Every structure is written in C-alpha cells, then in structure tokens.
Length: 180
View 1 (cartoon, rainbow, N blue to C red):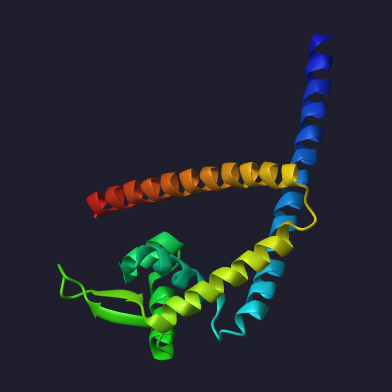
View 2 (view 1 turned 45 degrees about the vertical axis):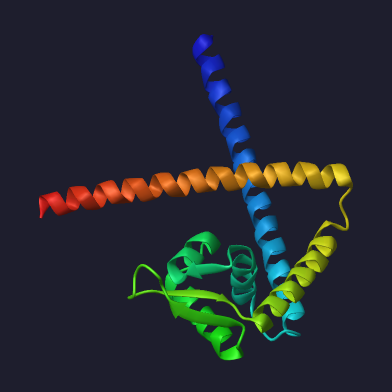
C-alpha cells in the first residue's frame, strides 16, 4: 500500500512540477514580451535626441558618475566593453561626451559629459520618467510596490547566480591551465 501511495505521490509531484515549469516559462515569456515592448517604445522616444537605448543608459550613468573609464561604464551598465566603446564613440562624435587621459593610467581614457551632453542626459531622464509612467499606468500603487519587490528578488538572484557562474568558470579555467 505504501509503495502505491509513493508512486501516486511521485505522479502528483511530477504533474505539479510540469505545471510549475509551464507557469515559470509563461512568466518568462511575458517578461520578454514586455521588455521588447519597452525597448521599442524607448527607441521611439529616443529618436528625438537621436540616440539609441544603450547610449541613453551610458548618458544616465555618466550624469551621476561625472567621470568614468570605459571599463567602469561597461561594468556599471552591464554592457559589453566593445559595445560600450562603440556607443561612446557615437556620443563623442555628437559632442555629448568628452574624452580625456586617465590621471593614473595614461593607456586609458576617462569620459565625461560635455555641456551639450548634460542637457541631453537631462532630457533623456525626462523621457525615462515618461516611459516609467506609461509602464506603471495600469498598476495600482500597491501593485507597483509589490512588483518592484519581486523584480528586486529576481535581480538579486540572477546577480548571485551570474557571480557564482563566473567563479565556477574561473575555477574551471584555473584547473584547465594547471592541466596544460
């Protein structure tokens, strides 16, 4: 009898697991769809200033950092360093970012916003507020707070997972190097 109950319990657990996986996937797909919609809307809003979403993110960070190296900008925006360099080059050509030698390491540069860049970054900040208002419009205040908490939990988990995976990859690389 207990074996039959154990088999039935396993079947129920399997069904619950499949439903949970299906719900998890539906949630992920909904998030991907919303992210895509936000990106499309952001691109549309940023046509006025003539920049892209990646450049907008860099400008917002530089507005608060004042000065940063390209590697710092890449790290704080979680952007590929090559993509950061390309986006910064476009903003330099536009006259929104100025590049100077790094004070401690002459092989590196620091970037900062020009006067035009500060004005542009402030305009972008206004556009972000417009996008945020549009994003949150269908939600009650309590739902907004709850969603912010949930997003925070997911972000923290993914950051920890990425950090752990990086450490594991580093350990694997060290092991591989020792074997060679």
